[in-house]
Image (cartoon, rainbow, N blue to C red; front, side, top):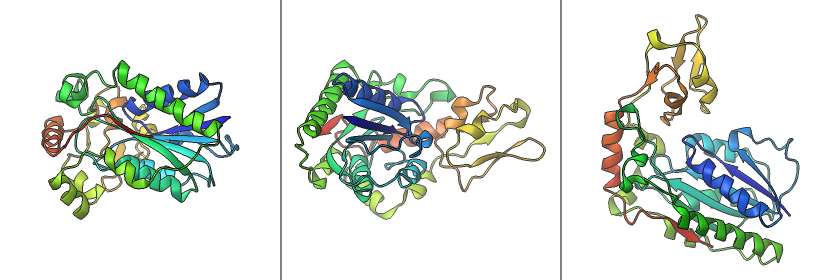
Length: 283
């Protein structure tokens, strides 16, 4: 049996879960390959898998914009079974597994289940440690061993269903049970886009004198928002930037930064909108 594990990850949270999904499948003697969405090429993986597992982080209550574009470039997988999951830092979020399921249904997939997994929030306190590595309220210590065991168990159950051809799909409405939004968040989600919600957070700042011209930031940006000019200086297209702040993580000299106090403020504010922000499974 062949499985394709696809993920999108900036902080490493979703990658960690994808790797555990792969281990769960290989323990059942599946041929499971894992790809970051940006590295996946249908020419290097020409097989029609028996199972697709797709995971993304929650970004502004939604699938990250760049991940959504990459998902929509995936080939058709008519009749292939699929399991979807999201990782999030215990802040308010849209029903991302539900949205992922809809994207894969457009590709012809048959959805067997989904999960929402609490992970450390990637916002940085004073530009240093992640909020999720400091405070339990924002995912410190998650996913813990029992959560990982549950996740692995669910993936194995999904695999067994595919092996026995017991692939009755779940109703999409079931995946809506995973979300954490309350009344205020529901209203904001209905009347504001991902880009509108992004407006509250600060732009990336470029400190020219600190730049070592390694261009790691250019390579890290999936939105092609960072380029270098003819004079080899960095240029940031604010209209294209999705404020994932991944470029600030890879910059070795601190030439790229942002107003982390403002990021933390809005992170805590959005956390107040969360309702029952916990790890949940539907399968």
